[in-house]
Length: 111
Length: 115
Image 1 (cartoon, rainbow over the protein chains, first blue to last red):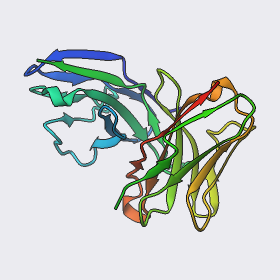
Image 2: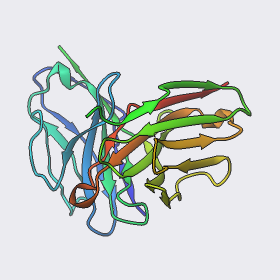
Image 3: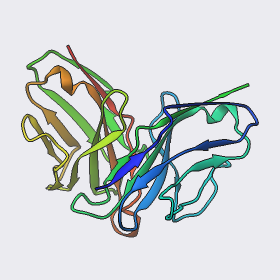
Image 4: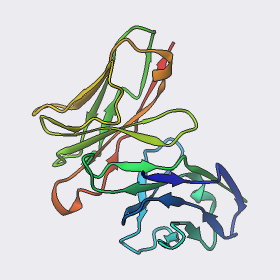
């Protein structure tokens, strides 16, 4: 069975500090991992996908198959990064590419 | 491209009434997913549809819930005889065909409140 775990419900950091949002998954095969972000009063939007291996808004995430993790990192947090972050896993199945989401982590960046 | 549209954004229903949630996918997208988010929870998959076909509804409750995606018009998620436990945010996402079909674009959601 697929499962995505985001252990932190709320993460508060100061502006300029490094931030790491944790995500662990369980799946025996090779899933595709994503990070979605939801800013206040906006829709859920794709931030990163692991196969792209790119940096968006200063965020990066590396898939660690040994630790089954896909943590999201940014070296210097900005106030505009305050948002809800969801880690999600996708595997092709009868459900197409349905996403399996974690419960989310609320990031608060304070000045 | 206006993106995925959902309406209404907020819907209040009394117990026993019907709720109809609409989702218009992005132009050119032929795949629609519906997700439900209960309070303090992540989004949970409900149903996957292509035009005129329900591909997988394994995440949808067997009773009272139904979904469609007609040839013309939006996708509809219908909840009959709503109960308090149906109160949640309902999101739809659409994706294109082919190589890019893994990418899902989300609508703003419909917040259903059952009183």
